[in-house]
Image 1 (spheres, rainbow, N blue to C red):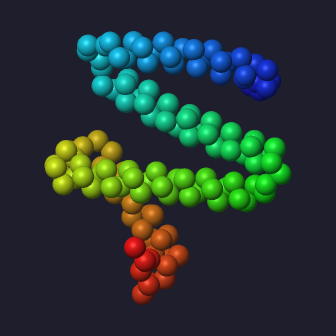
Image 2 (image 1 turned 60 degrees about the horizontal axis):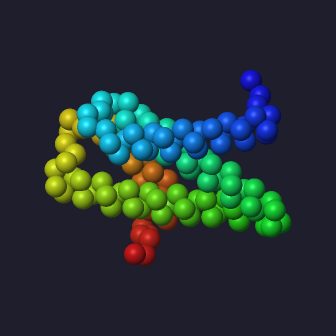
Length: 131
């Protein structure tokens, strides 16, 4: 199912309006189910990052800068965000807000192992990145 640029623009405007309404409702909500809220947050974060990335690519095309420079910028931004999230996770672990029973911990462990292996290959086995 393909959406025309005009249809997508209209949908984006409607979604922006709807999100402002949801934001208002969230600010006054007293009781909420945690699972739908978490699902919403994840979808919103993924959509925000995708929209930001698409916007950066469009800006790059308008400025005639290469796609490689935009992709490098996006990778740098992902590194910045990941660095902050890792620092936050370390703080959560230190204050025991995350335990072996925390949902998603095994997946994080597996992902961190895969990232470590790739970083290790990038930096070399005997070489550590500078701090």
